[in-house]
Amino acid sequence: MADETTNTDAFTSVPTMDGLEPLTIKGDPGTPATIQIGTVTTGDQPSVTNSGTASNAVFNFVIPAGQQGANGKSAYDLAIENQTTNAPDEASWLGTLGGKSAYEVARDNGYTGTQADWLASLKVIKETLVIKVTQP
Image (cartoon, rainbow, N blue to C red; front, side, top):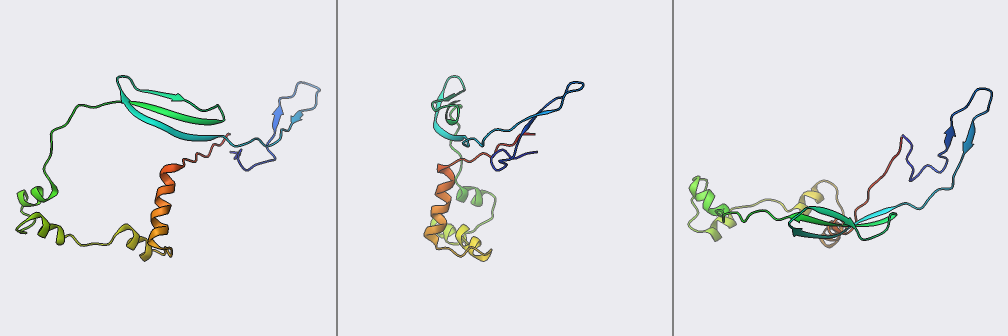
């Protein structure tokens, strides 16, 4: 498969007819298209509309709202119910839940930036959506 975003030598070959040479047409590289998420709201019917352009799309989603669910039990209530803790209250139970943060795990696996850098890198993911498009 040719990657249209990086292959500037892509061409189209026109099929030959008996006795004729193939004709090759080469175009200039185009500007990559972008896709962004616009609004996400609830409504009666699902829909997706493009409030941008064909090459700079901004998709707005309408998602049907589900029915209101029943309030569930807290994790502490479930721990008591399943007899996985003997903590006298929720605050004490929370104090027993140790473990590393995602940042600490990243540091253990080679990440060298600061915690502020780590948090900033997570925020970029929800602001930008990049889709790589290929063609056969």
